[in-house]
Length: 42
Image (tube, rainbow, N blue to C red):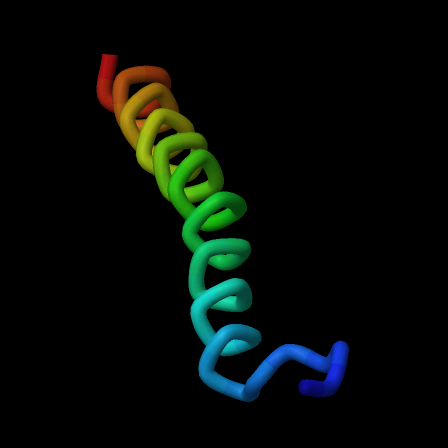
């Protein structure tokens, strides 16, 4: 067996990494839009 990971293993790791970064980012953008809306609409 080789020590290299299969492409399927790497694909799963890449998806996990994107979720790890994009979930908090999406929440931050949501909060930003929510607070900016409150700021400009009173």
